[in-house]
Image 1 (cartoon, rainbow, N blue to C red):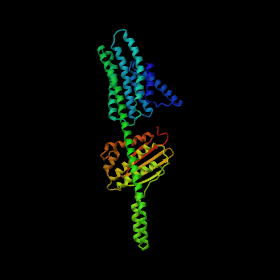
Image 2 (image 1 turned 30 degrees about the vertical axis):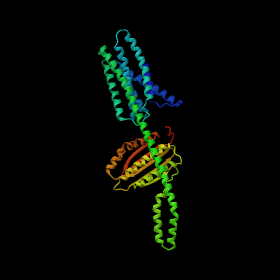
Image 3 (image 1 turned 90 degrees about the vertical axis):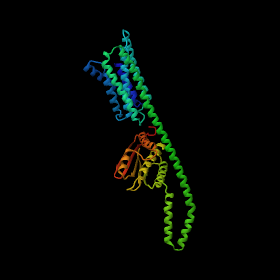
Image 4 (image 1 turned 180 degrees about the horizontal axis):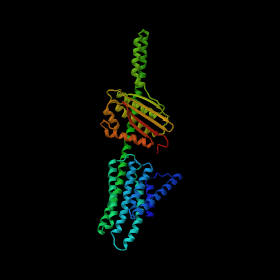
Length: 428
């Protein structure tokens, strides 16, 4: 039992710890090891004192894994809950399997096999922890609820069968133990495969999300290029026409037709305002995105206002920044275009302060059903699969930079507040 407690302690640390190669981290996990090991010994001792029977590991290991997950801040993390549950089930299944093999044997060999198997369990537990670490789902933020539910259900079923066998094993004959042996072996393989399937599903979703981010970035780049080319063409037209405009205005003034001249100049100013409008906030990436989104807003009849206070360089990967802003503003423009009773407008605020970047996107909304849809993050676009995934992309980028996002409604305004940590975030 002592060796098993040591192996379990090491396995839990291997599973959930965030390793860094520095003395402070090493000291930290040495303390963790001592606390987990002592807790296991105490819990097993209390069980033995109360019941004078085996099976303490069913309760002690569950408590330790649960508390450690909570203590590391994984309490509400679905990947951590799935990992802990399946590992606990595999561990209990392996312990039960080690009990079933000698129970299926006769004679003196039973004692020898029992000793060998209990030592083998220790090694296997560590190998399972390494296996789980290799295919860890803890690094993924988006985990399929359905896949996780199936895996957790299989793990819970495994534990129930293990508990039942532990209670009834003394009453089961050799044939029954042989069947239990085969059953636990199959269940063990299924639990290990189920965790790998969770990993594969997470990796697939992550790859799909990355492709969508790249596609969005590429589309945005093409749109920016097209917008810049259009702006240059418009400027050439303005430059070409300005001589004619000035000549005609001079003619009106020379003939004292001041009202006509004033009206003519006003018309020119209105037509040229959109052409000459250019956003320059001092940050090239953000300025390009805002110019692109302003053009989209104008084409949809949406008024866009903005306030930006940022440094020329922001410590965020450019593709992440472009993807984040375009998704947020596109969503706001889409929502604003549906307004009937209120004005179609969006308001953008971007502010950098110390090591944090604050983004606030506000769009008008005027219908109760629109409000409900907005908070549910649903869309009416035909490409709903891509657009819906856009919210996950935004949440993924925010999480990558240790940030936070809040979506809420205030009166006839739908507001998205984002804060990003500009520390060591790019590789975080």
